[in-house]
Length: 472
Image (cartoon, rainbow, N blue to C red; front, side):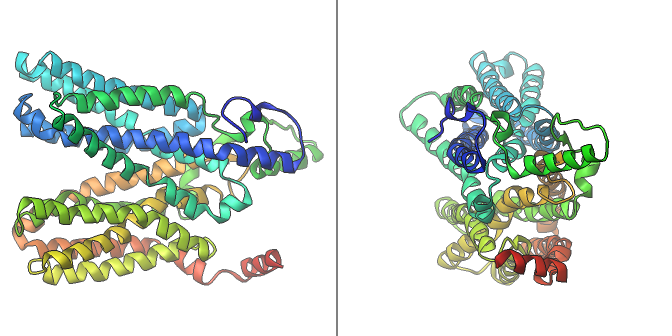
């Protein structure tokens, strides 16, 4: 089996040999990119698990904690758009490594501010330093999603992997939940052992550095080790056709796609904004559920019930991915069904959320976690890979990182703006208005996908003919 060091460097060989070497390295590409995004969530979740200690022991005000979150979300959203483009333009391995090293450095600097008590030395300068660190932290954290997805798309490009793309990317997107759970366990272990709370920030700083060094060994694209994939064959055929016409041929590799070019790929813009409405629904449930449930249950029960939503999100991506694979990659249709079911649950919530018992809420929120998590996870992975494989760019442009970054970034910006409506809605019209608001967001997102859903359910005659010929 190929490893990260030697077997892939051999040259030559027929198509079977190229496929064998491609398949042999896939596990390592999966492992390194999964771990990189795992580290991103491990890092950001560890900070949130010690917020109480930062306020009680470090003297951080609730305002500065809120500003840290806002600063991070803003730069993270913009960073997704920039990082995807950087990953398509420069070496993805370099971009991923810089993201990990930068994240580790930001957490280390946050520890430095705690060790030397910057806030008590000068509150204004201390807060400025902390916000500056978190400004950079958001950018560094944004590299894992779009660039990691691009590397996965580069390696899992053979016909078998494309048929199982939903399952592969559904499993890959579990990195975020594994990172979140590990962060909670790490902080619990640190505090239970009697160590200072800042160890919960220092540990992910060290692990980010270590994973950054491991990421440097990653080969980001099969073509870098002379593995001829379908994309390379298509580019070679296009170049041969140009040469036959007497045109100049530049075979320096596919050019990175522009933002305008990425938006011109069919359905990219619709998915980018649809994802924003779906992400908004997720953000509201994730951030506001503990607050809402805390008004009706004791804190332990409220957090337990809210946790079931997050637990349901983990298998959601795998379920949507597998089901869409079963239906020939018709992911928009499967996502539309899941979102339609979610609207039913939100409708029930709008009428009965104040009176439902703990058991009913546990079941409902676990199912809602699956319905929300599945589409959210698969849109930024398998769907993005499908979009970047469109015939208009296949073999001609590097586009997967840019497409994923645009979907992630536009989604985060839309969701962040939408979150501003939740507080005023619930205080003025009650919680039922919030659930109706989420129903509307889900409906708008689904409607934005309706052209793709229609084309999947009723494909053009020529596509059906091609599919039948391919099956024979």
